[in-house]
Every structure is written in structure tokens, then in C-alpha cells.
Image (cartoon, rainbow, N blue to C red):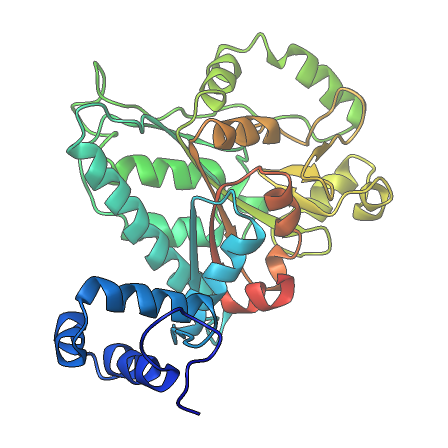
Length: 346
């Protein structure tokens, strides 16, 4: 059919418009050259091509990498996200974690590079957890001297009890070393590492409740709580209640609790050594006992994300099955994830 048909109003036929579209989109010719040969202006041809797309005569398909498409889908589901990176799931959990760590380190380095050239740096305080991705990420961050301050997201001080992973204070110390905070020039206007040297009791809920009641008098905890409410970048991880990752089950048992007890109250996962529900809200172990140790409150992360700070969540494989609850609750606004996790939640 070569006559005029319903679509972009034009003195040209549909066939002529589609031929011009093919030359522009497929053959890569310049609009000016096409328009000149057709005896019309380049601006008129541009309008015809735009209307042809609007009417569905021409459809532009971008064949992106699967990971790019998954990242776009994650962003579509959670529009508040400022950044999404997806890597292909590796043959082993460690391979996946290392791929995520490499991507996160490049992103973090680029963020710090921009800060160096900024007259008004926006990144001053960083908190980091003890997940595998974060541990590997720190090893890949460029060594540099900064005036940043670093703290752990939780006060886990039991590396012997957690033989399968690093703890937040250890990872925070390693990051501080990479950022040049633990050298002879420490102090003054330079940044510093907030080290946590206190341990919550684990013999009973009553003892733990008493410890939390008096924790506000401890200057170390006072400083940390103040710091946790003034964060610019936070690195978080989460695991499901049924995960064997870490010593969650052991710690709960010491307090006379179990994962089943908490699941009965709506708990679906653990983040920064706090338990959370499907709304991304914290579930206390008992009245006056928010966790089995002092940790950055989830509402602090949510507030940081709400004011534009970067709260980065690692989500990968079955391990991070409850992560969508934290995204739904806007606890995080940046995600580094793998393709298998995306396939499971999208």
C-alpha cells in the first residue's frame, strides 16, 4: 500500500517514511543527507520520524546486556534507587561475591575521586558491615589519604565465633587503613576510625536488657550513636532467618530464643545484626532489647537514604532473599546484586 494512511501527517507516503526510518536507524545515515535527497528539511524529517515512533510505525529496540536489563528492571520496581549494579551470578558464592566487590569498589573509588575535586565534599562519615562482599570490596578500594571517618554498623567483637566471615569492626578497620586513617598523621582535621571495644552480655535477656539500659552512659557508644545518625555512606548486607551465615542461631540460643520465635513475630531477616519484618522495620528481641548487641538502627539508615545519603545494600543469591523488604521500606537507596537474585525477586 503506497497511498497516504492514518499516522504521521505528511506529504510523504508511509513507504517513503519507513524507507527514511530504515536508512536512519538501521543504515546509520545522517538525517540531513536523507532529507536533502528526499527534498525536505532535516527538521521536518525529524518530526516525521518522531511521530512515526509515537504512532508505532517504527519501534526502536536496544539489545542490552542481560545485566543491564535486570538493573533497569530493579530500578523500575524501586524507582527511589539512586544506583543499581547487577553482575552475573558466578559458579560459586565466593566468585559472585568477588564480582560484586569489584563492581562496588570501582563505584566507591569513583565517588571518592569526585569528592577530591569538589569544593564542598559531601562524604564525611561512612559505616560498613562485615559481609563477604564488603570484605572483598575493601581489598579492592584504592589506597589514598582522606579526611573521612569510618565506623562499623555493629559491635560484633567475636571473630572466633564467626569463623565463616569477618565482623563489621574488622572490615571497618581495614577500610580505615585503605583510606589512610591509621597512620602517623591521624588526628586534627583528618578523619578517624571509631573503634568499638565493648561487648554485650549473652547469658540472658534480663542481663542484655540491663546492658542496653546503661549503654547510653558509655562514651564509646554515645559517640557511635551520634555518628550513626550523621552518615553519608552506609554499606549494608542482609540474610534470611534460615541462613547459616554467621552465628545468629547460636546467639539467639544463648538468650533462650530461636529463629522460630522471631519468625512467629513477623521476622524475615537480619541486617546490621538487627531483625526486620516485611516492612523493613526492626523487630526487637524483647522489650528494651533491640538486638543481641549495639548496632546502627535501621531507622538511621532509612533517614540517611531519605536525606540523600547513599545507603548501599548488597543482595545476592538465596542468601539475600529478604532484601526486597528493606527496599520496600526505603532502608536503602543503592543496590549491588547478582542476576540470580534479580530473577528470584522480579
